[in-house]
Length: 314
Image 1 (cartoon, rainbow, N blue to C red):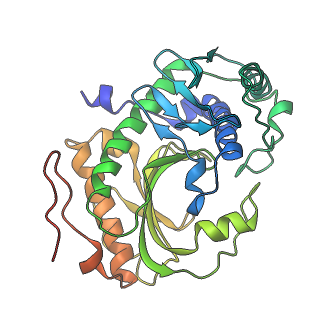
Image 2: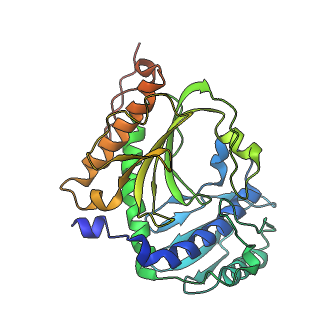
């Protein structure tokens, strides 16, 4: 059963598909970015997990219509659907980023959606513009499907974890820049100005994204030779965070990345993957909130139960 719900996802075996799919999601994500009003912490750019794959959710068109773009990793097509009933499908198959970009922008033009995007990828060192990229051209449908199935499990558990917090919390969403699914909790306090450097992103974007203290967790399907992992970090990193005892035992603090990592492979092979992920999310949040002295009494609550209203505190 675990192999069906939690499929193997060894980075080395799908690296080429990963890199191509990362860039395809950026093309789609930048269409949403170009047409959606700016929302705090860049939440307006993200994609969302669906029962088929990943979607933009509805995007406003200039003429009052709305449209959405969705990766379907069961049928292996990209769909563009418009509120007036029009639409297009693009088969997902091995093709270059340049061809994918051309096909999608042709569909956008034929549907009179009037969208132009910045063609330089974000958060990828040494990247070339989408319309010039003939190098990344891999698509292994098996691994694209496995990737999406892993996302569905992470999405389900992140949404459950999110219900245990009364303070400001992000939606569970997929950031195409960093190619990860994430959920973030906020202490309510402002943070020091972000001074880092991220390829392809203006410093103002990062400073607004990290304007407030956060405890952020997510699922990252791998990269730079590292296999898929669940992660958790705090910004700013409080003293004592990296040494806080977290669970399960397979979770470790990565000095190189500055965050806790729980290997996806350890999760999928354990007796109770759900419990392992939820324990990781809870204990790494506690590491951040306790180390940074968050007002946990006012911010936390019991996790929600389906169909049962939460009793408010008076």
